[in-house]
Length: 109
Image (cartoon, rainbow, N blue to C red; front, side):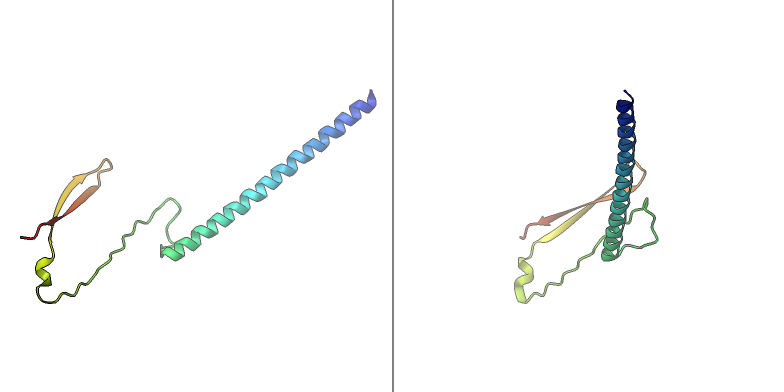
């Protein structure tokens, strides 16, 4: 009887040590994963040129503008269709003024 109780107590103690060890391993893994993700995020911010002064809650919205030049000779200008741009202004749910632009090509006469 005493042998069974002793073995049961030793088993419970060993199980407790195992659970504490698992918690420590999970804590180490979580910390390592957070470190790696934060490092990757910082590297991506550097790569994309985002400012480092922003907190995690703030977000930067940027737009890339691409400009193209086309060189035309002679009567080539007559063969290019025109373009009509219409703008629509409205206010969204947060009170921001939003501009919607619609580009349509006009046929050549």
